[in-house]
Each structure stands twice: as structure tokens, then as C-alpha cells.
Amino acid sequence: MTKHDEQWDDLVKGWQGAEFESASDKAVLQATVKSSGNKIMLETVVNVTAGLGLSGYIIFELMQGLPSLIDVVTYCVVLFIALAMTLASVWFRRGNYSALAEDSQSYLQLMLKRVNSTLKLTKTSQLLCAVIFIGFEGLFATLFGLSFLSGNDMAKPAIALSIMAFIGVFFPSMYYFLKRFAIKVSAEKERIEDMLEPVSK
Amino acid sequence: MAKLLIMKRQQQQFESAIDSHGQSFVKIAATYEADDKLQQDLHQEILLAVWQALPSFKGQSSLKTFVYRVAYNKAFNHVAKYSAKPKHQDLDDVHVCQTDGPEQTIQNNKALENLMVAIRQLPVMQRQLITLALDGISYADIAIITGLSVSNVGVQLNRAKKQLKSIME
Image (cartoon, rainbow over all chains, first blue to last red; front, side, top):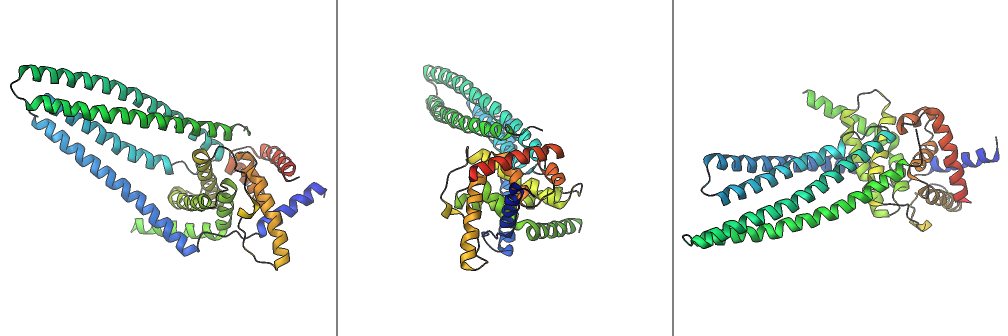
């Protein structure tokens, strides 16, 4: 046995003999893990139920027929957001726990693939936000102008102006949030690439 | 009824995993996160991931390799999300239980603390190979867990050992 092997054996003995402090005893750990699992499941169920409920109500209202174009557009925006949030809650849950039992190399490849698609999705959403912002602001500005000029019902320009203000705050905020998120995801991608780099199959 | 049986089996498998590998999970968390509080969070996340992954365990591999894969993959998630490079830390930050006499304990703890700090300086994949080897996992099982070939495990592990030695010196 070489000196190098002896040193390694000493390390193994030290490592296997060491008892590391655990956060709490087994029963408490099990209870915590179970309740965390249940909590995540409950959150997902509540998110999905609320999202589907809201989407169902909006679709019902749309099918009944809404009084004006402004109402239709507003309901469509809310429907889009509700469906996106429902899908996101299911997607995040699936992403967290599926495929965790893959071997490390495959899992890292999968992580890279996921992070790449998240990055693409985020950048597409950023573009969509900019397009929706410009399109909707233009549409409501036109509606505001037309209804203001016609002067029949002074409530309509006020509604158009309120929606313009909402869109003016919501979409730029969303764009900024997505931009920050894309920076975070890019950093995550770099870290995964670093993890994959040193060892090849 | 079937659901109850599945739950009971999941419970038994989880208890068995904790009994056999509970210490390994704590050590994995300790080698992938230097910060004490985040280390505890990672430990909890690993346990939660093992609990949630157990229903998908079909017995194609041993429970040992299954839970190790889940634990390491969770640790990789943590590294990808929170830390770019291993953090340098003081030796006092490593917590080890005292089981021997006071003098022996101090000596053992010092050696283990040095080892732990050195392991954290290794690249993530080498850290995995070293900790698995230190846990006494066979090359064949390491190959299943990491996805490397058995011969490559030997090559990569030797490289990791050399690097660990140079860090410790």
C-alpha cells in the first residue's frame, strides 16, 4: 500500500466515522418533509382551481356577449394572464420534481436544456410584452380619441384612459421583471455549463 | 386502499433511506453549501426531494443509488441557483458532533474540517466523485449515480484525489 493510499484510507475513516449535526431528529424531519410536500401540493391545487375558475367565468362572459370592444379586450387580457399563471404553477411543480432520479450527467444536460428553453420563453415574453404594450396603448389611444371627439358618452374616454394607464404601468413593469429574470437565468445557465465542463462521459 | 398501500411503502422506503443514508444527506448538503443556514435549507430540500421522488422508484436500481441520485441532483439545482463558485470559509463554521474524548475529538474535527473546506474548493462533479468514494460507494454504483462509465469513474476519481491532495497541502 502506497503512502497516497494510506492517506486516502485515513480520510475515508475520518469521513465515515464523523457524525454531522443534523437539523433535527428523524421524526421531526419526516413531519417537516411531509407537511412541506402537502403544502406544495395544496398551493398548486389552489392555483390551478382559481386559475381555471377565473378563466371559465371569463369565457362564459365572453360567450354571453359583452357590451363594448373595450370590455372584450380587457376580459381577453385577464383571461391570458389567468391561463398563463395556471400553466406556470403546473409547469414549476413539474420542473421541480420530475426527473430528479436521472443520473447526474443526464440530469445536468436536462437542466441545461430546461434553462435554455426558459431563457427563450423569457425573451419571447419580453418581446410580446413590448408588442402588447405598443399595440394596446395605440388601440386605446385611438378609442379614447374617437370617443372623446364623438362626445356622446363622456364615460367612455375615461374608461379608455384608465385602461391606458393600467397598461402603461403593468406591461413596462412586467418587461422589467422579465429582463431581471432573464439575467438570473443566464447566470444559472453559466453555472450549469461550468458543472458540465470538467468531466466528460 | 391501493393509495394507502403506496403511501405506506413510500413511508417505509423513506425511513429506510433516512436510517441508511441520513448522514450522507447531511454531508452532501455540507459539501455543496458553506453557509450554515442555507446548508440546513439544502438538507431539508434534499429530504423533501427524496420523499417526493420515492413513488417513482420502480426498483430498476438499488434504493441506495436512487436516493443518492436524487440528493446530488437537488444539490446541483442548489449550486445552479445560488452559488457560482465554492465560498471560502473559516474552519470554525463546520459543525461536527463530538463522540470521542476531548483531545481526540479536537484532532479528528480539525482533520475533517480541513477535508470539508478542501472538498468545497473542488469543481462540482469532482466533489460528487470524492464524496461518493469517501462514503464507500463502489465504482459500479458511482457509475450508475453519475452517468459515467466505470473505467472513467476510476480516471476521474484519481484526478479528483490528486486535486484534493494539492488543495489540502
